[in-house]
Length: 426
Image (cartoon, rainbow, N blue to C red):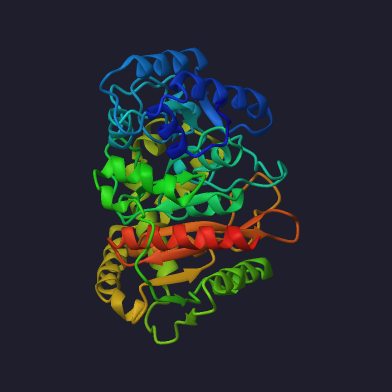
């Protein structure tokens, strides 16, 4: 039986365990796919095909490889890898090789996963885009900052790619590229070895070909097997929520929500009881900007001429208006709001919203509107985006589920069920 590219990581792992395929075979198929489509998409910052094959052969020889042997990963170039350059998306760090793997990489490798390479990020996970294009239409943005991770998965170059989200950097690009994005509860996945942007919100997550692959990766790097969905998910009450970002929703985003409600049997009611959850986008911005003045102080103060002019101008403007007093006031409000999250959810286990304003915008100078994501990053809540159809220009549109903090297992189970239901209705 020959191995076919585009197969989920779980199927590949099962095939290796059953002797159907070798890790080397799986690696070669994916490297062929990368060679075919990478020149037009620019999803990768670094891939060394020879090193990938040697690592695959070593896994095939190993008698102690873990339960992820056969799973291939892309790693966002914001995340440290000891054996590959880590540039943080900036020419200022060309050739930079950390001395260690980030925790989210080390634990995946310990479990037997094979890292194919580093995926493109916007510079320092902020606003200056990289070279990546949307696989569905190269004239449109793939989103960001985990742009390469989303494009690599969407184009079948890897089944799983690690990303990070401070505002909307996993959910939005996954939605734009028509794949699954999962931002876990804040700090569920250890972020040691990840270049910080705003530490109050930075979260390691995953972009994958399906929900179960996202859960598969997360379960292994958090050592929480209960995160993998079973065959019969717990019944969950789902409420449709119009956040302060709702005026940004385009018609295709609303149509996708209608498809999701239909797939859920029409049992979704609108959340109408929530009060006091407006103004979160402004609080998020105030906190993020102050933290950026410290996390990126070296780049802004010491090596400004080595970073892009756009980032330099952005960082200088932010430093001029941010302050500790503004941050402290916003953080105090954040703590109060997070403490009464039950007032938002009420009787519902999960909330349903758009993951983005609609289809990926045309143009490559920006990565899209993150307002439908920043609210949940601010609240530290887990989110999943699932493909739910296409918009008027033939580009993917998704829907987003949100759960209470640390209710990731329920979220992933419900998302897997909704994903399957939506797929049946296409």
